[in-house]
Length: 290
Image 1: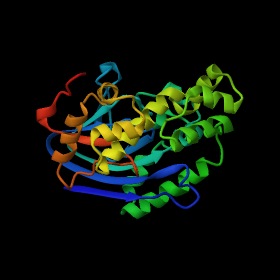
Image 2: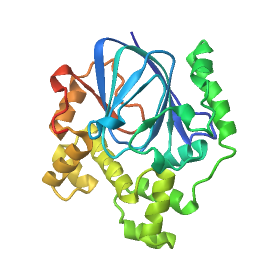
Image 3: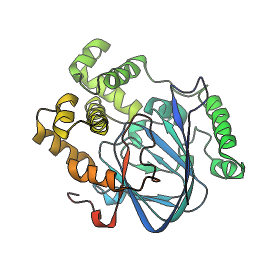
Image 4: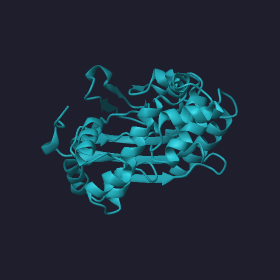
């Protein structure tokens, strides 16, 4: 049984909370999903069986739990489960996560943590509360109420960091860090330090993620890989191929094959307007290049 429902956050929250995803996936045997860097913090609140998140670049960072908070990343991870998983995923901008959790985002970038270990946000006991609600709409409404209240306090991102993040988003990462620093009035080092603390990434790392996503969107829209790479600002095709494999563990053609081979009922992309994952088949385990 596969069940997937996407729902926007309530009006007034949508600039900060990118949406909710209710899901129930049942699998016979193990199921693996390649999780592509996308610049979004995902908090999965599970109702039952555990999800294992593998970090191929650092096995010590692998994590297994029913509820998982995924920090922003510059390299892909792999989500794996055997049997069924059921729950709700909350999609947050990094700056919103910084305000909700009240800890530097740099402390849990590139890895997963228990949501209730991040003490400010109202995550303690939340999976059980959500599981008791009989329908998805009721669960999403409960999240709206809790998040709206939690966002009324907590550390706000600095205007300079918020502006730099928006500028990188608006340009798909095609702006120099020196230009960002100059326009904030900060030194490059100060911008990098504050930006990483409040988003989890350096400005350069964020730009790499946004450029990758731009190329993936262009490919999804029908462009060739060469045209997608050029339009997204990569120097040439070899530069794109190297960067793509370093960030995803897959070649562009292998990633595309993973995407097209997936069953139509498999929800691959959790974030609106982003290419966020691909289902891996046994033929592609382990991912070559990692």
